[in-house]
Amino acid sequence: MSLLVEYTDPEWRGLNMRALGVDQAYMYLRSEYAEHSFLYTLSDECYTCPYTKVKALPAAGSEQQLEPLQLSTAYALNFKIFQHDQGRYAYENVSSLCWLRRTDLQEFGVYNLTLLANGSCDFAVDKPGVPINYAFLSVFVLVAAVLILLKLGSCAWRCYRYDEAAAAADSIGAAAAKATQRKRMRSLDTFRGLSIVLMIFVNSGGGGYAWIEHAAWNGLHLADLVFPSFLWIMGVCIPLSVKAQLSRGNSKARICLRILWRSIKLFAIGLCLNSMSGPSLEQLRLMGVLQRFGIAFLVVGILHTLCSRREQVLPQSAWHRAIYDVCLFSGELAVLLALIAAYLGMTFGLPVPGCPRGYLGPGGKHDLAAHPNCIGGAAGYVDQQVLGNAHIYQHPTAKYVYDSSAFDPEGVFGCLLSIVQVLLGAFAGLTLLVHPTWQSRIRRWLLLSILLGLMGGVLCGFSREGGVIPVNKNLWSLSFVFVTVSVALLLLVLLYYIIDVRDGWWSGWPFSECGMNAIIMYVGHSVLHKMLPWHWRLGAMNTHFVLLLECTWNTLLWVGIALYLDAHEFYYSL
View 1 (spheres, rainbow, N blue to C red):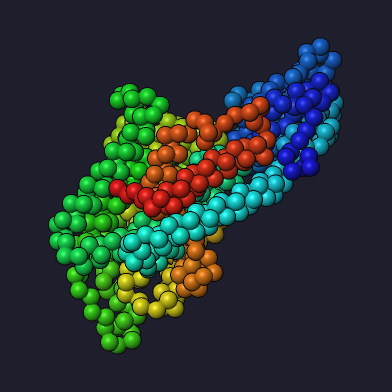
View 2: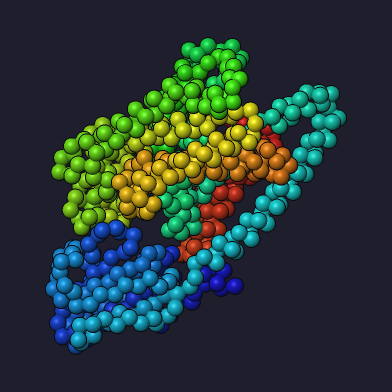
């Protein structure tokens, strides 16, 4: 049982184990070396970084007692001990007394590093740590039990409403409403609902697991998939919405005004959410998640409306019908290619003062601290010039790993490829309108997914740090767009086949209900982020199990709210 909840004794040989956080361990330092020495460390998370100074070690025989270090165990650690002080950072061109690399450090472990008299290092395990992944199993069992109870409650409520409706005089109208609801593509709502549920989960901490949280700079973690998936599915729905409005006789000018009004509301709500920490206009962050939604929706929505045809007659020939969606998308495709060209031209051609042309790194101590003030290269420079340092995000993930400066992952420059992300979603939505059979739709989506996946892989060299353009959510890089759209297409294929094609296999519950009230869930979880009953604190909160339990509780509570709203047939959209 102790394995499932990461239990460790509160005290071990005088050490307060409760003082450790998640993914932390103690390490004793001892020196038998005749002279003073200096310990430096480097985490695998920090790519091409120098070693960072941690502590000075006294000479052998000194009466100075060293307090044990608290180490991070999330990534492998490298240790170097130098005979002389190298300053804040130590570089590879300086020889060290000894070097160690440990990939087996565990949470709540106690370790011992000794510098021997001959200058070599000795590493010993005083207390083994605890495994951290069993917490997933225990929380999974709890979540499964809760979802079963929710499903039973939902079925009971629907049975009650069905009996009530059968006795009502307008039962025919209610049946018609249900029939209309069944015609709705549940897979789209499920995709959107899955995205918002994952967004709430990762925004609640994701249990403190490194692979769930956002990557520090390059790379793709679970949290990095959520926002682009949400943007992409918004794009999928744009052609369906525009066609429905055109078929009702609305003019294109009226549709464009509605798109503009919705975009303004999204941007305004995002600004309000940014002011929750204080309404100081001098330091108000101007951009954010909803702001990027608003900008991308405005551009893609109006562009698709202007390019849409009120009446679409499918070609008779098979080859022409196979490429008809590409023909209809030609106007948007031209804009898409122009945006990519503009992004690449500015990224690799814009001169940034004090930085190498085409720099894509996080600045700080990246690349051996060669460019400390160059975070994001052209993207960071453009945002600084347009928004000003006081109005961009002050705590990027790279700050805590690379000692980087302020950078906005939802800044102005990244909007260029966010629009491309939504345009690729619009093309997938156009496929639904042009291709009448589920087989042709799935073939088109799979072909596009493979093509984009290969293009993204080539750009990043099929690696985390390699290639011409690494996968990077902070920069919203081109490879990031291609890879995330590829993943989104695969997920949509799976959901579409299971939910809409094989009707009866799965209805999409409970994610489809969440998808129909996504804006309520997003704004609600943002506003109530530090309030009971959504969030709570109990004791040290220093294990993955308790953090996972707390963020899962918050996520399930919002799922329950979405189910309650669906049961009362309350749906809200901007």
